[in-house]
Image (tube, rainbow, N blue to C red; front, side, top):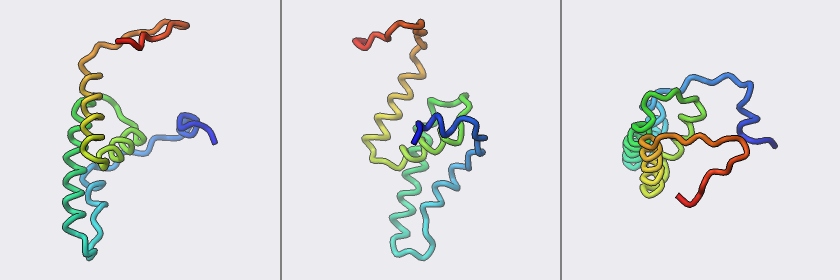
Length: 107
């Protein structure tokens, strides 16, 4: 089995679904746990908004959107850590690494 990149290369990107459709997909009509599913759906939608905020202006693939949706359904600590990491990366200017150079991990 190859890497994710190998499986993705050469495959057309599928247009990302609208986020409210993803959140609604968590609801199962008639299920006795509808109230909890609705709360989960709202939580996921809120988390997606937090995660996507620092990514505004970037072209995201369907794989990127799927990853964000998966992270959005994790516990609050995971979502907060990921959102913080994305926000910090957004405000930090990128550093170019020359071929053969290793990135300083002490910073």
